[in-house]
Length: 171
Image (cartoon, rainbow, N blue to C red):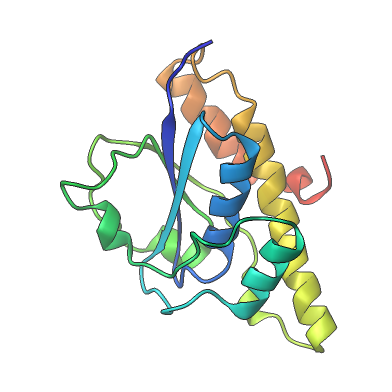
């Protein structure tokens, strides 16, 4: 077992829901082993209120939650990322900054709960479903034997996590 702490950046367009949820989940799943961050290509300026409500309801610390630009993490003084995951299709299609240190990248797209339509209850369910999908993916990621996989095998596993539709179900 390694004592390495890995830095992980979750990217989305607005950095108001999915990427913030992923940051909170990873921070809880494997503290000390991973440091979680999130950002957006076009940050909305504030977390979506349903994101904060959901995270608080699940006893996550929300003190970290702010909508920020991915440019913060491309600066020379930014933490060196080991992994960068896009969690929305729009951000995955954009030209990302060059991340210092050449981190491993993968696309783990999940539906945008901020675009849900219907009653307030239906919209909140969309946030819960997005959280669950992210939690499933992150749980598999945190259980990968990172110190025993070569870079090629690790990239394959990261890509599989993002493509596996079964991860929409509970693990």
